[in-house]
Length: 328
Image (cartoon, rainbow, N blue to C red; front, side):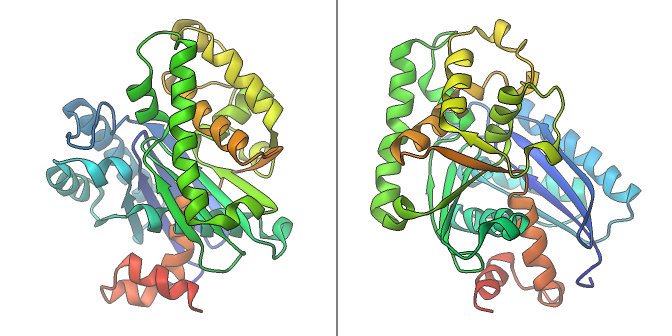
């Protein structure tokens, strides 16, 4: 693949499957579809049959979209749900066959590093050279990636995302105040570990928030009825606004919550858990705001894959390319 050729990237997450198709620097197609692959999973559990079936159906649709755009260079990654499930192997075999390409299961550090590349590249004209933190709130984990633009980030992954925090902490609809307090407290405890491992996180000038949770919270704040990357990308989401959205959504039943402008119905069941993660971050790190980036993991995969296209073709792995990318 040439440096400026077409590439398709598939990100198989714990809550949704994302597709990104690029032609050079131009985005031809970007979407995210909720399939709930990590629904009900525990550290010792497996992927549920219904969730696997929904994800494989979506991957079949993605293969058709890739063919429509004549994409032959496809990079696919899988994250937290596939990392921890005890029945990942048969799913990966079926998923690879459906996509007609290999799938790389990436660890939390690689996930955070790739997200860092994607987010900071997309906003580099606004970021300068000062260290920044990229926070990727996923369905089954949250990654904190800290470093200067273009440098190797230090990454810590915590085992809470919007979906598994919801499933572990909330037994009532709407969640009771003590459940919300416990959920936020659990995330704060994990952030304490992040600060111990990466003290620089408390001194960064810029914080970027990526992935579906923060985009959804921003959409609710703005009352957007449809996802609009041009409006959301680079938006400053203030702590006060995030807290307001949290208070509104956390006190509503699921049946009422779905009527909020800007809240996709397929994210209504886990958005309060996602809010708890974001609120914990903003409170613990005392952030007045966070910058929304609609570029994320898939964008980082595209950057790194293009950088090492010849080595990928020769059989080198994405993790090796990622390390070499930061050594340039």
